[in-house]
Amino acid sequence: MRVIAIVNQKGGVGKTTTSINLAAALALEGQSVLLVDIDPQGNASTGLGVSRQNREKSIYHVLTEDLSLAEAIQPTSVEKLHIVPSHVDLSAAEMEIGSQDGRTTLMRKKVAELVRDGRRRYDYVLIDCPPSLNLLTVNALTAARSVIVPLQCEFFALEGLSQLLQTVEMAKANLNPSLVIDGVMLTMYDQRNRLSSQVAEDVRKHLGRAVFKTLIPRNVRIAEAPSFGQPVLTYDPTCAGSVAYQDLAIELLQRHKKTKE
Ligand code: ADP
Ligand code: MG
Image 1 (cartoon, protein in one colour):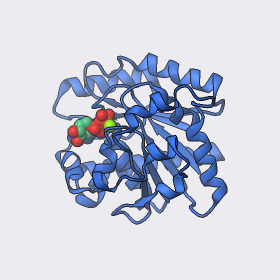
Image 2: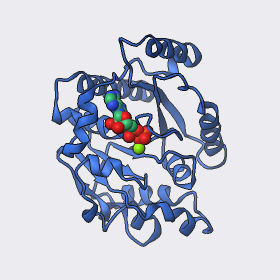
Image 3: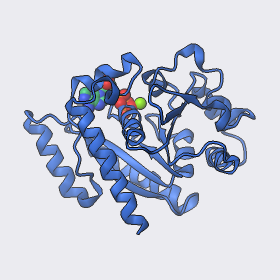
């Protein structure tokens, strides 16, 4: 089971969209996938059709009470994709757990428990992180094997990236020695916009092979799908956004296969 944290402390860069659609694309490729929503805003939960009334067993309860991840899992409209939803109270969780010993390893313990329990087997666990480098994000970085960083193809794309990479290094040095970066992923790419292609080129120059080959285009179907409680891949399977997320899933699977060999 591979745990991947989708991280960027900036809001609106495509973390949640990527969490939902990469998770769905992996599931459609035959992988069994669990998406864990640790953003108090809960957009991944809503986007996968989990209503606000249906969150009595959420990641908040997993992290602050004696509830296991397995007990908080819900199905989605995609057969091999399950979710552990978020909860508005999660914004207070940081205060509640902040003074505990082991406050940075709570998520890792819950994930280890899920593996030991053995009833639910997943190939991938994706964690949709909040737009900050807070204790929740540190918990995700401690539980994860790897990190995917979505970058929006806009002028300030690289701003904040060094701070993010420092946090990843810190988590690696102090908490999680095997943590690696799967890649930086360019999203909301607009072919007709020169700035967009300039940014994509700059980022590739800077980061080289760390950048996924697949570019996610700006695509209106991607933005529409969450209001139907679905990933774009089932909402409109042939649109450019769906094709791109499917390509991304295949590229990721190939990267992981290579590192195993
Ligand atoms: P984050 O989780 O980083 O805050 P989101 O995934 O919620 O970012 O995306 C921010 C906004 O941009 C959302 O309204 C989403 O629908 C939209 N969006 C994300 N990716 C795309 C895309 N490729 N094409 C069009 N709209 C997108
Ligand atoms: Mg989000």
